[in-house]
Length: 323
Ligand SMILES: Cc1cc2nc3c(=O)[nH]c(=O)nc-3n(C[C@H](O)[C@H](O)[C@H](O)COP(=O)(O)O)c2cc1C
Image: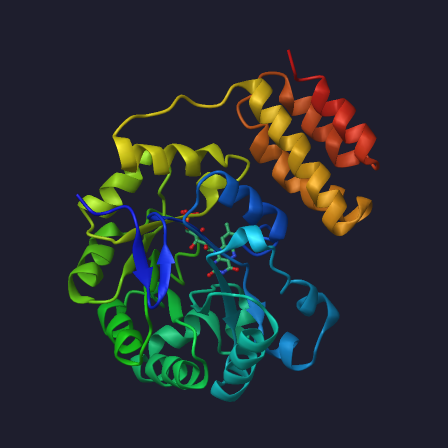
């Protein structure tokens, strides 16, 4: 059995449960909650190198880190070496991030058109050059997150080894190609091949839905850590239960309806504090449906939350679900 903690470069990670970066979701509030529920490492939502270059205010606001978040990884994406390097040096100087992660997996058109994200996966040489340039420019550990490939022409092992030889200190791989987007099942066989080849820590990602899946990712795929995304949406208990299961072999029970409602209210309150009432409520709407998933009578409440305009109204609606 693996020890609980491990290292990414010089950074000590207390356990093997990592929270995936999720644009529009992994803001400071979400990440602090994830930490409080036992995540060993949180990765910030992707931040554009161009946004940093032009000092776009929205982008700069995304760089804020709370002291409770450490160790934390800040993810950047970009299409050319120069601006990626500039972004990396900027975040090293102006934020307290422990790790810089390069996004090479983003499948959305806006990012692909800029020849960034998963587009880089068509050329292991380009992967090497990008990672090498960033590694040379900063002193904190650099990691890479990628998909298994662009389409059927997988260069999963080649790309992973290119990142490693360029100096990446860990590599996370989502077991889907760009063309798959989020469809089909994550291919853990490919992840296993990559895990067997790398010497740096390998972080397995894709379809880890239960604590038992996490154990499989570590023991059968051979990953050093597991990255959890969608399963933690509205369900920070997934992180707590996974960490506990990996440590003790015991499965904690699922949260009660009351616990879910209480947590949803807390998440809303923190979002409103952080983003203001309008933006906070707007962001919470998406999360509400995750928090309330599977709760009897929640459908009508979710619809009403989508129309509510004050924090007080949303809280009143949520309270209707408590017993
Ligand atoms: C809403 C959403 C936003 C995402 N944003 C990012 C992102 O900013 N950077 C990134 O590398 N991956 C992003 N991803 C991909 C996830 O990090 C992860 O690789 C993927 O969801 C598969 O893991 P899962 O099956 O545990 O969800 C995003 C996924 C979702 C669902």
